Amino acid sequence: MPTNGLHQVLKIQFGLVNDADRYLTAESFGFKVNASAPSLKRKQMWVLEPDPGHGSAVLLRSSHLGRYLSAEEDGRVACEAERPGRDCRFLVLPQPDGRWVLRSEPHGRFFGGTEDRLSCFATAISAAELWTVHLAIHPQAHLLSVSRRRYVHLCPREDEMAADSNTPWGVDALITLIFQNRQYCLKSCDSRYLRSDGRLVWEPEASARYTLEFKAGKLAFKDCDGRYLAPAGPAGSLRAGRNTRPGKDELFDLEESHPQVVLLAANRRYVSVRQGVNVSANQDEELHHETFLMQIDGDTGKCTFYSSTGGYWTLVAHGGIQATATQVSANTMFEVEWRGRRVALKASNGRYVCMKKNGQLAAVSDFVGEDEEFILKLINRPILVLRGLDGFVCHRRGSNQLDTNRSVYDVFHLSFSDGAYQIRGGPRGGGGARGGGPPGAPADPPSPPGRGGGFWNTGSHGSVRSDGERPEDFLFEFRGRGRLAIRARGGKYLRGGASGLLRADADAPAGLALWEY
Image (tube, rainbow, N blue to C red; front, side, top):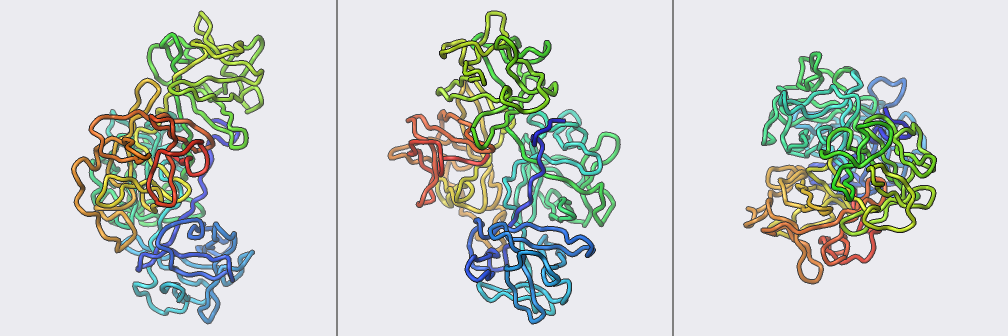
């Protein structure tokens, strides 16, 4: 399995939404807490931590402050503790509808309230003590079975999802978490939902929705009958078993999903490691040995390419490129130059990677010509969720415009043609007409013509809409770890802004023009 952090467990961050559709917020001033925020931003993010030696008690730490929520005996609450003490211990009591109740472990009282009137003094559970868990991580990831140490992926031939893969390789290993009616669905790369009996269905029906539970930093998925998803049998088929309490078999890790790409050289053949350690453009199909995991360094912007044979691309003698390195070093780092529909790669010797006459790649060129340009295609995002600095990209209600500051998200469909991508509208992923938003949120009005299936297109003054009848080309530039810049046909980059609308008017791929994907 790859080293150097290629497979990293995601730190589970989430927001807690009360019955009045407001998020639990930790304020810097006075370390006070309230439930006043209408959306999930930095101050509304929390991390659940186990409290070693205290059974099922957990700690709630503010991601923003790095401090712990506490409840005193008189019910007063704050987020001031730098180190967790007795008053910081809570018990999480999941409810049948997927919401949580938080009870002070030492004092036995329930936490709740509205606005700035929060306390932990209630002796009985009312609507004010119910909290909806809204994950704050990017919803597209890999799912790892803790007991089997195998990744979940779509098995089209068996028409199921199974935890039987040693590595999360290929598009089949992409899982998208869909927020529906205060619960979560597991969506496969072909846009189907996993039902608790193991079947894949096209609609997020009740038996395909799960309540999230956390245990020792791991996730468990409880179905509508109180049973938990687990891999079953030799094939690891994912379905709800008999257990009504989560054990090791029912626990999963979420791991970051790095981009997986194929490269097409000037000879119209795919770069591959099929015929040995030399990286060569000599294949007519994009299959397992033609897929490379691309990881971008957050500090330098340079990238590595990891092959299915278990080695990184590395610069060797005489400028050759081989997939033999087991560790990241200077020779495995490549600088990417974005050249419209093509890319050029510069190795650590300062020279560009080119395709030699025999198809082998070598970093021997001082200038970029046809043999130094490649088409780079992202293959493990057939469906796409975008999040910017202010929130997720989502259809504006009653409109074909796109918001960039929402707590909920839409899932868009991606297609590829000659170095460019086309983006098409898809079903709501984190809220909307099917009730996926925070509890009590109004449903979207009926969709206007073209909504949900139209292509993204740019209009006058940089506007971006999702009602195009014909596809429009956008260029993707991978600019950082998990960060993407999208360039429109006029040369401008897509960005969010104060208006909350998606626009194509940024001059540089930075700040509000970078998207987590």
